[in-house]
Image (cartoon, rainbow, N blue to C red; front, side, top):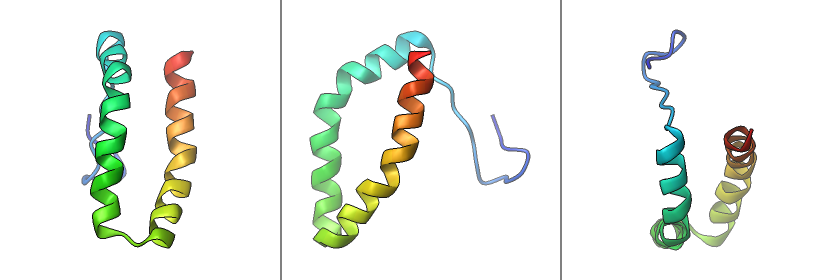
Length: 66
């Protein structure tokens, strides 16, 4: 659904079934995603990216568990 505040943003909500499927696929996706970013980022920016993504990821995980 489009954001009311920013037309560039589209929010997506996964069904419970799709969420479970993504959780099963994540162990395979994570190393691939990391390798992709490591090709274009040096170590320090890579650490900064990982740190900045940690909070939203934890929030999404907590949200999907409740």
